[in-house]
Length: 180
Image 1 (cartoon, rainbow, N blue to C red):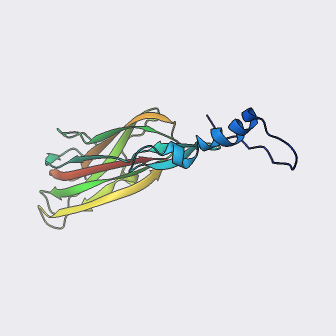
Image 2: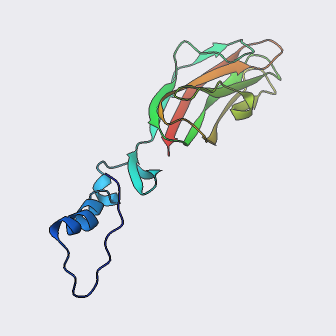
Image 3: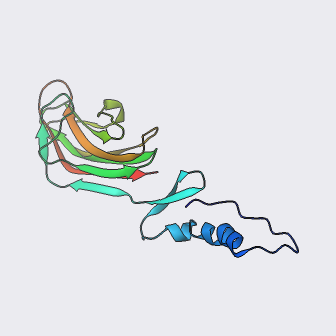
């Protein structure tokens, strides 16, 4: 049910029960107070005069894993979130990265598959470069992705090392997905 414009009250006019129910009761049933059914969620518009509840989703992988791939790849333990999303999504991802070679860099990005498909790319990644072998860096990257096709999507972290050989290690990996 969507919100509808209520009638305008005019002195001397009597509203019927059906008019009152459509203009007042039914609109109250789609108000913020009626739609907000669970603590810790927030409300967003999903169409004109329509709101829905959204839940931020989080995936965390504490253990470490590594790769020597120069192209984005998965690790043995996947860090991913499945979410039924709208047209926009706020994502944050990152972790602790280190490399076994001085001057080598490591990247974490995200693949999106489902109603919209996007592959992991450097322009949307967390990047850390080591001055010394085994230096550890921890951080996150946050971005808003727009023009998505609403529906069920899988957001999965992907990892790579920069060119030049060597191995990059990834620990304490975090992915948060907040749909709008």
